Image 1 (cartoon, rainbow, N blue to C red):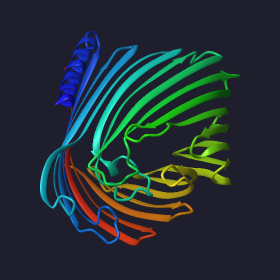
Image 2: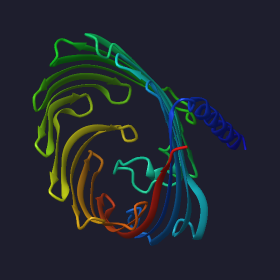
Image 3: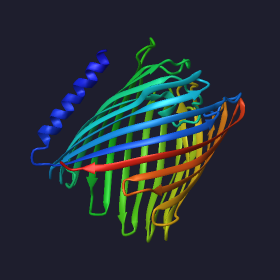
Length: 405
């Protein structure tokens, strides 16, 4: 009851802010509707394999933007009616789920910026985290957060940027003991140095405090410091970054990365290569490669990345490797075909996990406002429990339109 009152009060506050800001401002309202039908087998990629899940998702969204020459006020809201039949529901259930709210105010001039925002989201726990080590997360997760950013001296030889954010995460109806309610506070300060028109430098400090609110114990604190240089070129830029971090769980880590971004005639090529040394993982090579190419009637994207992380639940370093390829091709003026393929490896002393995914989509513009999407997916997971497969199909009818009062 209290949360409902808070939501209604928040919406009334947003309406009042938008009305006050709308005087002399350009206002754009966006309305969206999507009806999606999904059918999949073993959607949680578990061993032994689960049954078939059928879901009908009716999603409504609303956005409002009020903009003047100096400031912008943005608000968005969305929710969905989910009718689902699966092993977990024990029959057909219908619920109003997946609410999302976002509010942001930004004031920007050439030499300074001020931005403050707030967010609210509630969804299935496995919808938030894309970490493949977290399989079959049950229950509901709610995130409530706020953030602030202040920049000065954006065009001056010396500039500063201050950021801070707070996020509260709450879980309901979970069986995984590692899913605990947490409060996370982040603070960052960065100094930017403009040595010349093409040479830029930066010095940054960061602090993070994570506290488990439903577990008795000390909070986890992380401190970071970083130095960076950027050299602007006629066809892109070259970068070098050196960072140090100290974490209560992982220990100390030092990382050095050099990068190069190259602007192509019809695309972009970006590469990073570096080395990292941590108390939990030792010394290892990290890097990433991204290539995007426009085609005569489509586009091709390629991504390759290797990173070193740390799993707080198992207290061990995790080496992750990701390869993905996506291709889009216009069939005619109103339809297009999309193909995607990805393979991800999470390698830790306790377990090696591999997840491969293939997807194919067909998009058709019924009218200027209405669109029809359909597709198939196929996922494979290999871990300590064995191999699991999950094929699926979907079809979605959507409409989005703008209104200027």
